Picture 1 (tube, rainbow, N blue to C red):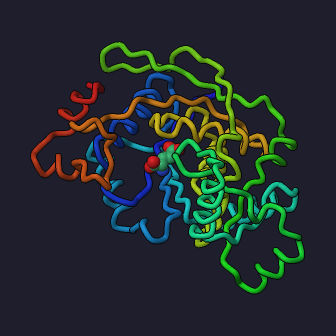
Picture 2: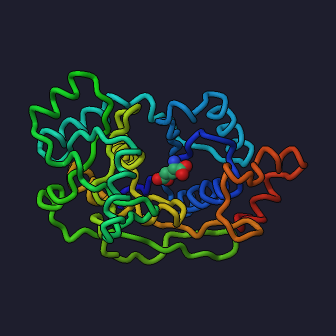
Amino acid sequence: MTRPVFRFAPSPNGRLHLGHALSALLNDALARSSGGRLLLRIEDIDPTRSRPDLVAALQDDLAWLGLRFAAPVRRQSAHLDTYRALVEGLAARGLAYPCFCSRGTIAAAVAAETARGRETARDPDGAPLYPGLCRGLPEAEARARREAGEPHTWRLDMARALSAAPGPHAVRSFTVERAGPVHRIGAGAIEPADPARWGDPVLARRDVPTSYHLAVVTDDAAQGVTHVVRGADLRASTDLHVLLQALLGAPSPCYHHHTLLLDASGAKLAKSRGSRSLADLRAAGEAPADLRRRLGFA
Ligand code: GLU
């Protein structure tokens, strides 16, 4: 069997919190028990929220936790040309189209549907599915608008994508077996995937030539990742990721989506809700060994 490859892939939009520590430690524990490698990827595609000081801070937090990553560290911001070329390739195959709709235009179209008594279906994140306003734009018009510099995203044409890669699509998942602090790769399963519940998702944003979904699939393939371990909040995204892998001819890793740590009010930990960061815990005198014990890794 080839050596398993795991990765921890934080976005440097804020300081790491306990949920990140759990994810990173679980990836590390599984890499160790399986004789695998652990890679680090910095998901810094968001030009407004990613900050160099936060990249340095997260690497410092991970080193403090005692985590070591195999080189090289991959930074998504260094691969924008790769993502751009992939979107162009999908567009050339008729599987992606430029979308000139602003959020306001989409909201108005959805509201008009609602007013007519037709409820717009929502994606797993709760956002209304894109109503398809730009899907059928004549090629010449779309080109002229792009050439005139009109801001646009690129969307996957889900119906065409599913004709090109009809499936059935599936997520290969695995459980984690735990004996004290030791965590091992457990039994595998095949879970049916339903990518269509994402409608026509954005593949490239207005300001960046990619989206989370395209970048994560591209990078897992580029880094040779065999086992993806991440929070349960990303489980629904995996249905879309397996379709993108099929379209791009990329191998599909095995997935484990771990349960999320919740705060005292039962909400998921989030930087935006002021969850205590690892930096706060460090400043309060918590030792890495205590934190590992608290999360079940010592
Ligand atoms: N960058 C994502 C996050 O910090 C994780 C992506 C992934 O593990 O696929 O939530």
